[in-house]
Structure formats: C-alpha cells, structure tokens
Image (cartoon, rainbow, N blue to C red; front, side, top):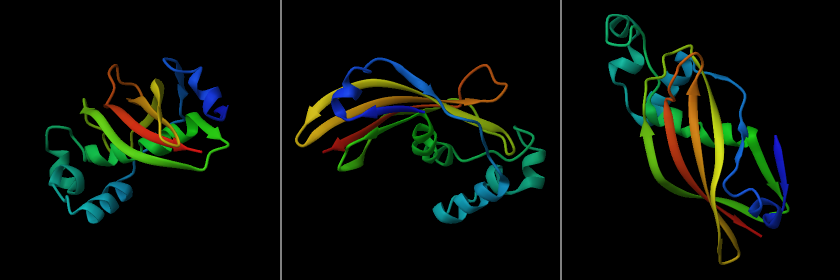
Length: 150
C-alpha cells in the first residue's frame, strides 16, 4: 500500500503507476447478490446450467459488478491521509474488454493520471486496469474521478 501524507505529497505522483492490488475471487453468490441488487438477472450471470452451454462455458460477472469493485481494489493500492473527505465524482471512460468467469481472480493496477486543483482540494483522475489471473489482456479499464477535500 502506498501512502500519501496530504495533497502536496500526492501531486508528486502524477503520471505514476501507484501499484497493484491483491487478487480478488469472484463468486457465484456475489454475482447473484449483484443481480438481485440491480435487477439484472440475465442468464449468462445467474443460470449456471444454461451458461455452461453458452459462449463462456460458465456464468460471468456483470461488467458493472467488476466496475463496482474498482474502489475496493484501488483502496488496497493507495491512500491519502490528512483529508476531510473523499468524493466519487464519476467516470470519464470505461471499457469492459473481456468477460470475468465465476471463480476467477481479478486485481487492479492503478495509475494516477491527473491531479488538478478544485475549490477546497484536488480532483484526481486515476486509470484502473482490472486484470484477470492468467489472461493476456485486461477485463476492464476505467478512468475514475475523485475529489479529495481538505
């Protein structure tokens, strides 16, 4: 875990790869709970028998489930101390580049793409690349915007 002691410390890391999270296993229970929370019960996610005969040979995680794990994965990579509040400000770009099969493991690599001043703090843009264990290409790439307020 990389730790930054305030905003000024963080500025110096602009453009750097901040690190990589640990591996995170995607379970069917988690996929089912996400389906219940979002109402997305498409068979490729929740019907194990049908999915076995489908294009991926098993159920796969929702793309938005993978995206929703970005804050947790990034939280293993870095943190900033001496702040008043951190706000999720949105996303610039998200690409779901490959499926995430149930039982597989993912991790996030985080790059600090931009740091710019805003009223009361800074706005960060971080690019998180979610990797699938054993795969040559990532499963998700997202530019995430957060605001760090002092």
